[in-house]
Structures are given as structure tokens and as C-alpha cells.
Length: 248
Length: 205
Image (cartoon, rainbow over all chains, first blue to last red; front, side, top):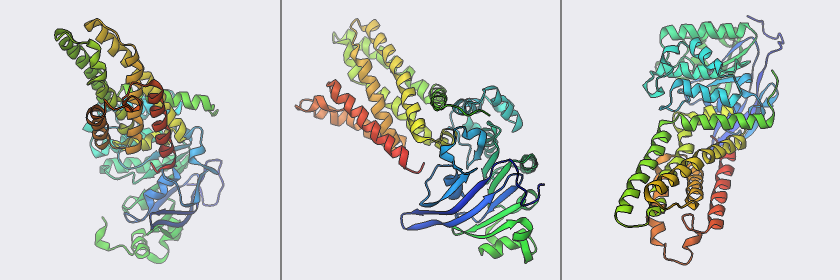
């Protein structure tokens, strides 16, 4: 693990005063935080807190009402080689159900100017080599997530942005992704993962940002966020006021 | 790593769009269906002693409506649009690449359709290639605006098979999107594409 505050050559994600309004509803209210190279940053909050909205703005899918979300100082939409800079996993597989996994990854590689040989490599990394010619509609939830992750890894990116990466994975898959993300961070890369599922977070992350109703309620290193609450779980419930029974 | 040039970014995006079109089973079936229907109806028209090129302005355009529409609405199935925009974040580049890809696919498909019609029926109508391609482009733009297959398909087919035929004898009919005036057809295709591009550029994905 790289200690906090050490500047690395890797790439930083910085969100500054981000606000998003849909109609009269304010979904995000002045969010500011960073995800630094060499560290795994968890973006925590209950469902509907604004995690996905923040990540969508960061990836240029939605526009912000005000504020900025920058990748190494540049908005995502201005990146020329986005796949080598940022690998992204949002919910589902991001693939059309009637395409094969291989065809799906091939067009993404083509779009990113990535050699087609890389497709077989990422399929092997996520353990889908034997299912590569099957149509995505026949995939289990866990396999769909692995395919989404394979797409994120195509460009061997400096930064990974993962929305609920352990959702739908079996215990073996969860264990695998934990190790994988730690390894990415240890080679100086930036990992930002969102989660409403607390179990897997504590062992994997260095930093935590807790969001509740569109506002950040705590951020810092994991131990700073846990503070006097005892465990990350206690801290989470105290900070978000979420009902205890409502979460796994 | 060396950065790609703007031209390279666009040609890479175009290759990706082409791959998407040819690997989508619904597109493959639609193309085969267009050719089968063309051959069958051409035989029926010839046997009935009618003009074999009638099929090119009858049921065949529906197939090209489906082609154009699917090229856009398939993006909104399985969340593929997010994958597209993460790989090609510049919206105009992403849209133009898809526009060129549908022209590159529908042009030859329309050419082969006209050829099938001419070979089976005897008479050739080369202008139909332009008409069918323009129809696919209009459908693509409608698909980009509505983003959902079923409402867009119902709307387009209602126009082409109910409203269009109803007003066919009116004086303005030749200037409509299914009319015979080339300039008007080009303006319709360009106009609705510009509208769709503007929407794609500004809307949240």
C-alpha cells in the first residue's frame, strides 16, 4: 500500500463542487472528493444516495448542473484514448444480449484502437474464455459482471471506475475481485469503486467517501472514516442514518 | 502511449459501428428477410402481369425502416450505449460513425435488393437504391430521437403504410418523406438527422 499523501505518477480523479438537478430534484449537492493513484477508494452509500449519478457524470454519460469531474485535470469527454485511461464498469454487462461476448469485446477494442489480440487476453483474465462464443443473453448475472469487467480492462487503463463491482458475484468471484483490485492499486493505479454492500469493503479499500442523499457525509482514509465508530459498518449506519435491517 | 489523431479516432469508431451492425443477429435476419420477401413478391407480381418494381415502394421499405431503426435502438438494449460512449466519448464522433456505417451497410443491401428484383422480374429500378437508403437514414434518426424500438417502429410503419398511402393523391405528397421528389427526400433525411444529432449531443445518455 502506498501511504496517503504520496504523489505518484499515476492519474487522479477529482470531483469538485458537483451538483446535479433533475427537474426540481437535487440529486447531487456540491460533492467534492478525490481518488488517488496507488489506492483503492470506496464510494459508499445506500441505494439512491447518488453514487451512480456521480459516476455517470464522471464518465461523461450525464452532464453536471454545475461543478466539475476531471480525470487528470481533463473532462472524460475530452480524452482521446479513453479506454487506456479509464476502465469503467456500470450496472449489467453493457452488452447487447444477442451478441456473443467475443463480438462485444471486439467492437469495443476496435473503437478504442486496441489490438484485437487483447480480447482473448481479457477473456482469460476474467475466466470467460470457454464461454466467449456464447450469446450474452445466456450469461448468469455473475458472468455478465465478468464480461463488463473484461471490457473495462481492454485498454489496461490507469484508472478503474467500478459501480457496485461485487454485485452478482459468487463468494469466489468476490474474493478474486478483491485481490485483483488490490494488485491494481499496488502497481500505482487508481481504483474507485462504489458499494452499498459493506462486507467486502473494509478489507479491500484504503480510502472511503460516504455519500447520503446527494451529499458527502464523511471522507478520508478508512481509519479516519471509521473514527470512533468502531467498525466501518457502525460508521456507515451512524453517518447515513440507514435502517440497520435494510442492508445486508 | 501515443495519442490517436482525430481522424484515427473517427475511423476506429466507424470500424466499431460496422462490427456492431454485422454481428447483430436482428440485422442479419432483417437483411435476409428483405431479400426473401423481394424475391417472393417479385415472382407474384410477374405472375399477375404487374410491374415487378412495385415491390420496391411497397413492403420492402419496411425492411429498411427496421435496419435503420435497429442501428440506433439496439444501443439502448443491455446498456450498450454506456459502453459506446465510454469508448467514444465525443458524441458527434460516435453519431457520425454510426451514420456512415448504416450508409455503408444499407447502400449495398439496397443494391442487392434491386438486383434480386431485376433478375427475378426483368425490370430494374436503380433509383430505388437511393430511396431505400434514405428511408433507413430517416428511421435511424427517429430511432435516435425516441431510443425505444417499439414506439419508433409503430410510428414509422403507421406513417409509411397508413398516413402516406392516405395522402398519396394530394398535390404535396411528392414532397413528403415517402414521396418521389429527390430534393425533398434529401432535405427530410438531412433535417431529421441534424435534429437527432443535436439531441444525442445534448441529452444525458
